[in-house]
Length: 567
Image (cartoon, rainbow, N blue to C red; front, side, top):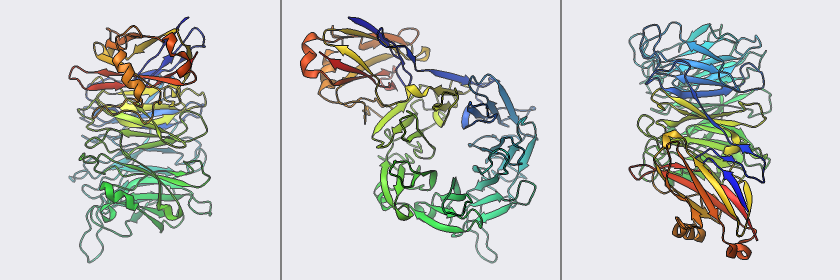
């Protein structure tokens, strides 16, 4: 018996066989409607169903775009799902030089109660009035998005970075939302006292955009505490009014989170960094991403990043926590980056969703490293409820992993993953992965002793000419193997791995090592020995591969595929 099983490895798989119906695991690449080198398309991403047609849409930042003859104005794009071929350009009015609009992820919601989703794009680095990096924000009103309302800090300050974060609380279509915009490096200048530099503040439009905003200062100002490094909506108490979680990334040198009452904006709780962080020299605790039941135990959890943590002598490698218990003092899970990287900021951006549609929430954590020069960045998937199964999503493209969001772009009821590669192909790209390529549950294909099965490795034209090697394991894909900084393979090393490496190139493992062709492809054939039948029947043989660059460094780790062994 000889069955055919083409599969795409990296983070993308396509499985077919003569026995099973074909299942396609898609990856597609989205480029700017106005291609230009160096524009950084994909620097920021936001996902929401803007036109409420059942397909999630992408809002993509292109920070280096020029406009009206002015350099580096930046712009945004609304790319409508499912095909992303319909689009709407978002431009600043008036544009400003080196504004780099959409530098950070913005926000979405109905801000004028007209039943349409409005978009907020932020420019925390723009210079205003001769002062550096004051920052501003833009509200584009749906559905046309041709009206731009510019918002500024009522007390603008140099280096305040107003617009570093934005959040719309409420804002369902037809209901006016509350807009919060953070300036985490704003100075606090109490009357008659010395200035507290970079204490941070949050500006809130509590009564609509036509009313004067309220300023929420840091109630315990410290230099560099950074109030507003993260903003998260949470229903903390039972009054029916959404409350606000605000991060302070360097409060007391480590960071904490303030819970602000949604009605009074007064602090009602302070969540400190857990003591366990000190053994990791953690800093930057306060990047709150999710409040709710992540672990499936019926109680609320809090997902918080500490992206400034030093790990393995790598500065700002990052860390991530899931906390529960009274006042969230108990660490349920603590995650270190699978591949610690200098300035990786692991834990700064996290998505929480059910990727594999198994009823349990999963985590998507991107780690960007040096987005301007590195092509080894990745997004890491942690599958609930135990989060011990880890999968990498990696594409050899500069800046890949800068930003990641999830959304049901194709309307099938399950999420897809979009990852930005801001310098991919020089101008920037967004890679969208079908959720079936992201499931860490290995799709087991039956194979009997004495049978053969063919696999097709397809890494795409950019990987043409790279060397590759495929490996085996009887212990599954998690936690996987880190070969070197920048590489990860979802294959648990065991005795079968060693046997497989010894047999690579033999008649049993044909094509399990070699060079990818001009299309980035190779054929692999497993000729499973008849003598292997009884002893291994009922076990799952996991196969994963890695491509290797000319410099000898691993470039692309694969998703796993599993073979169910029988007599």
